[in-house]
Length: 192
Length: 192
DNA sequence: TATTTACATGAACAATTGTTCATGTAAATA
DNA sequence: TATTTACATGAACAATTGTTCATGTAAATA
Image (cartoon, rainbow over all chains, first blue to last red; front, side):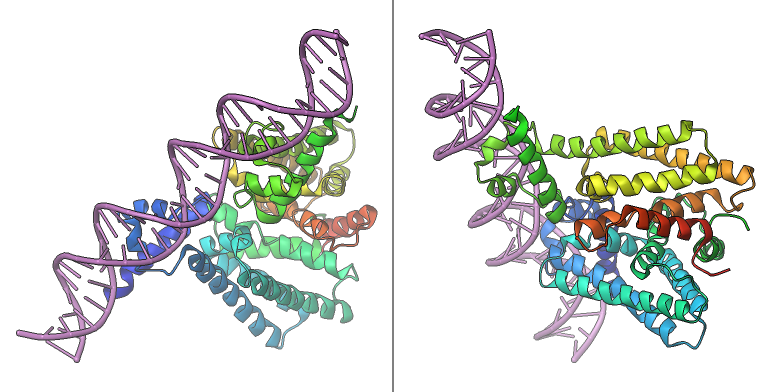
C-alpha cells in the first residue's frame, strides 16, 4: 500500500512550501525543485495549481464543520459548547497546523465559484458560533454584549495559534492552551 | 497645491485594489485600468510595485509604534494602558482600514531585507504589549496567566475589525466597539 | 506472460508580468 | 518668455509562469 506515498509526500511538501512563501508566490517549479523532480511530473499528482489549493482549504473547512455540528447537537450547556469549540480549534491546530494556516491566509486566492462557496460556508460556521453564544445569553450565563462583536472577537482569540505553531514558537500543550484561552474568554484578563 | 492630488488618487486606488485582490494578484495593468491610464504612467508615481507595498506597510506600522510609545510613557495604570491600546487600534482602524488590512494580510510579500526589519519591528511592538500586561500582573490587577498566550490572545481580539470595516459590514461606533471589546478583554464573556 | 499503474522526463507553448525607453504636452514657475 | 514640473503615451523587453505533449520505465497486477 505504498502507492499513495509519493503523492502524499508531494501534498505535504507543497503544503509547507505554500505556507512559507504564499500561494501565489509558490511556483510549480518551486515545488518540483523541493521534490527533486521535473515540473511536468507534478501533474501526475494534481490537476492544477488551483485545485491543489481547493483540496487543502475545503478539506480543513469540512473538518471544522463536522466538529461544530457534533458539538451543537450534544446535550451540554452553552458554556461547555463554547469550551468544546475552543478545544476543537486547538486540536485541529495541533493535528493540521499548516492546513489551518492556509485556511486563514490563503482563501483569498480561491477563484469563483469556489471562493463564493467557501465564504458562504464560513458565514454558516460563524452563525453556528453566534447561535451558541446567543443561547448562552438567553440562559443568563453569558453577558448581553453585541452579538456580532462578541462572536468575531471570540473567534479571533483562536486565530493566532497556527502561526506560532508552524513557527515552532509556542510551548504546545493542548490542555494548557485550552485552559488559558478558556480563562481569557470566559472571565477575562482582570482579577476578581 | 493640487499637485499631489493625482499621485494621491493613485495611492488610494492602488491600496483598495491590492486589498481586494491581494498584492501578488494585483498587476500594474490592473491599477492602470482602474486609473484610466497607461501602465507606464504609474512609474511617474512610484519606483516599483514592491516599494508601493513597503510604503503602505511601514507607514501604518510606524503609526502603531508612535501610538504605543505615547501610551507606555503616560502615567496611567496598566489597565488604562491596555484600554488605550484597544482604543488606538480602533481609531487607526477607522482612520486607515485598508492600510490596516494590508498590514495583517500582505506583509508576507515583503522581500528581504525589508521583511526582516518588518518582523523585527512587530516583535518589538508585541513585547511592548507584553510588558504592559506583565506590569499589570505584578501590580496584582491582571491574572497571572501565561504571558505569551495572553498577549497573543489579546492582540488577536483586535485583529478582525478591519475586515468587517472594509466590508462595510460593521456598525461603526468607535466608542461602542471600545466598550464591547474592553469588556470582553477585561472581564470575559460570562456573567458574574 | 501481457498489461496496467504510478511515476518520470525534457522540450515547448502562449500568456502574463514588471519595467524601461523615447517622446510628448499642458500648466506652473523663474 | 524660457524652463521646469507633473503627468501622459505606446511600443518593446526579458523573465516568469502554469500547463501540455509525446514518450519512457520499473513495478504491480491480471
